[in-house]
Image: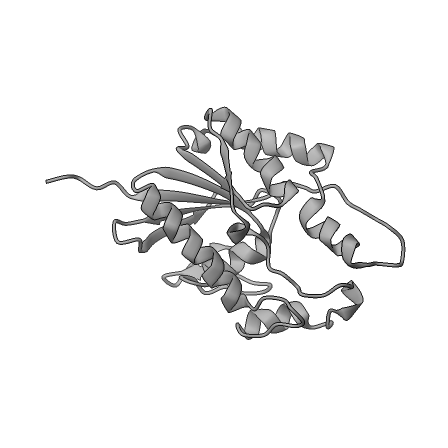
Length: 209
């Protein structure tokens, strides 16, 4: 009888991005730039390289990233260390606000969306839509890489919403899995979660590393 190995998923938030300031007037291109096109800062590049050297990330089999510049720029260090290419998918992208100016964002938007999984504005995404988008892609990646160690570089809000598939998440408090706290909810750049899935694609363990 074949012995099955669990599949390991590392969910890594991108490193520190370069801050863009274009004055008081904010147009759609500014939001697009800030959300998708902004590169890593010099410090962000250094932090990503240092993080990739952690012993935990030896022998990674597959590297994925969202299609944002800051995530791809982060992922390249983990890929380089393991002599891998970076696979890209927009399915791992950040939550879409659906606005053309930050002035359109209600002051309670973030908390409202955490409380109500179906809440969204404009052409944006709800928490539930983000979670299902990423979850479906994640399961697809797991199915193609059973028993392997997979690293995915993504975004804080999107990852939080994904974790809501299995965990109790909070806007400004603890995250719990099986009633055990594994994260204090204070997101840093390169925040990393190690998820262990069994042969049925069920999450059996999660750690904040």
